[in-house]
Image (cartoon, rainbow, N blue to C red; front, side):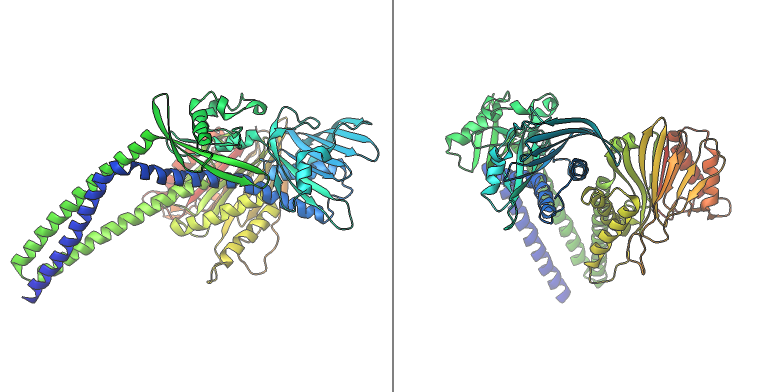
Length: 638
């Protein structure tokens, strides 16, 4: 009787809980139509925060870079610098942050140093010597690390005075970083471009007051705002207080290349009526920061204007969503609620049946069986949750891999064979383009495979990207040194000692023309293989015998410089291919057999070798399990 009473009590509690949930879902279902305004407000608020995050991701790296250069200025690193040294330094600065279009230093006497990139390898610099009454304008040619003077123009007259410019005056009145409203650049070779300038002064007690500044074009800002995703049909844009457009929405995506950023104009004059109507409703409200409902050409939109402030500029970030998108979202929610209510009803029926059976049998065996069934269901659900989580992790890991269009561009005469052992992998391949003729690529093998390896791969990939993009390192050995430093610092945050890391082969390729290339190689435990054109041997270059990670007595990574000719082929790989067990005797493949197979397929085009390598690996493995992730990169000099 006690068991039966307990069963009834459990049933009553479960029925009560499920009925309460069912009623709650029903109330939500029937109240959805009445809550569309609340839903709109919540969605707009979330999308507005997204827009602000994207703007922060645009402006904050520029401000951080300016602060970094300001510290260099305060340490006297630019004192007495030559035009060539100036261009070389600012070339590195702009390469590390492509959103910067020009860099300059001015002082209270009117002296001025300026450098900007005109196109891929052509640079412009200008220096104004106020005391000597001369202006020096130079055009530079940059090829790799070499810089040479292309054109010189030395004038006695001076038409440009930085002290008259708003960015200079604003900086003198502030002790922090200051932005200017948009204006037309008018120095040297930079004309017909509208942008904004960020500046900061250096005002030492015993020296001349100087201002260091960066130019940022509205083209770059619009490229960023046009890529902000705020729903299937929504968009975002940025305006000044009077409606001048400074960041275009994705409506202009197809027109971006043809627009003259000097004349993008006022939002009130936009060829897209939804922009002008949205701003006019904002103005009529007295520019109150709230959500608005507008109608344009028979279609309703919800609009949010939020203040985005830079020191020196007042901007408004606008978020616009078609009302039909929100209604569609609510409709989808109602469908999900119906499924949920149906599922709960089904659960109630199942539970009723189970308890009925248990009441009939009155036995402990049935109680235990029901518990086993319940546990089995929980295990299945947990297993599904784990698999779903791993599949989502795969999507995240895929996002850190180079996109296919970049792989095809950089390795157009090559291939990447990538075969993870599990859903996610510890192996990954990495590409970073320094310019059209210079790029890095690497085959990387992180500690472990599966989920642990994938987690390590995210940290290691981030270390490689930061070494190039943030610290501007272009030497392969120094790049691996910096990456190891970043990875070790990340793992040192753990209270437990973590010695995970990665092995890799890394090359930097620089095209020289006439089918020639220079190659710089560094490796962490892993080698580089080269098969010269017409050769029947594999030329092997070993990497440094240590991983990227925490080791005892670490040493600097070595770099090897080589020259390549047209038809030469290089191979980078992780150890998963050669370590696979298989063949007739189930033994490890090893490096020698791997080399022999590469030599046997040298008559094939490099792009077709991927299929042969994959076929050979599958045949070699046979019915045995793949023991590790596989990554092989092949590249041919064209």
